[in-house]
Amino acid sequence: MRTDRRGFALIAVLWALVLAAALAAELHAGARGDLRGAAAVRAATGARWAARGGLAHAEEALRARLAAASATGAPPGTDTLLLRPLRLDYHGVKVRVTVVDARAKLQLNLAAAGELRALAEACGLAPDEAYRFAYAVAGWRAAHGPRWLAAPEDTLETAVRPPAGAFRAVEELRAVPGIPPRTYVAVAPYLSVAGDGRVNLNTAPLAVLRTLPGFGEEAARAVVDRRRAASFLSAWEVVPALPPQARGRVQDRMAELLPRAAFTPRHAEVRVEARGPGAAARARIRAVAVLAGGRLAPLALIEER
Image 1 (cartoon, rainbow, N blue to C red):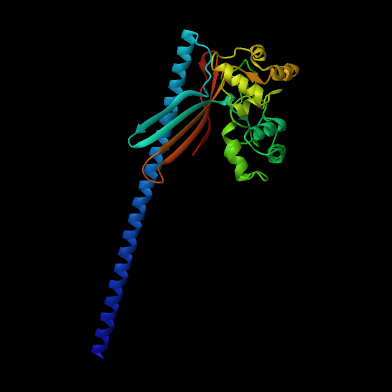
Image 2 (image 1 turned 90 degrees about the horizontal axis):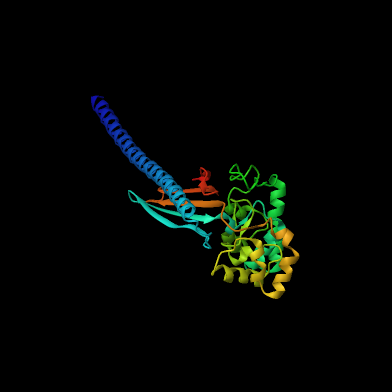
């Protein structure tokens, strides 16, 4: 009987040791998981603050450029990039910043269906594909909210953030029914959700120029060739630069062209991407800066993730 009690006690002790070992292993695994989680949080936080540092750097660089242009009376440039891409390093987190003239792109929330169709065809899509793209976008906008109305040109109080129901990012086109991946890849580089809907003839690429009233490929190429020599200052300088046939089409639609054309940037689309070691150390920021009268209004944050 005593032997049985000793055997039972021995088994109980062995089970206690097994349970203690299992508990220790679980605690160790949990501690390691907590350490990994804390490291991921630190990496994500570092990337986010590095991206914000890049945004602040871009804002200062833009202010410096505006001040220099105002002091020298420099004419408007013909480069889509308002600043050269900035490459920064914050304690091992690599940050890349691009600042682009939003008027060099077609405003996704403001463009008419005909303009979207013209852009898609200029990007190499067949007419039927371009038609489906344009009316898929128009249908989505009609179903999800009111159109975004741009503010008057003579004020800095402008709508730089898309309103409720509008496209918040060009990437949202991927979720619109009727827009296949091939179409998205072709048109996305020429679209923006920032800006007032006007097109800068001094910075817009061929595909975007072709969305203007009266413009075909011939007129768009003539504009690009002419602006390499000197920037356009008004729409009336455009007509003499065009070939005869294109000139007549643009003249016939000059009343439509005047409110659609611009010759200086007004909205800068700022994109910041921070990348550190590890998958968690990633951060992106999109913002819009309003430029007017040699001044820079405070940047409006569109998205941070």
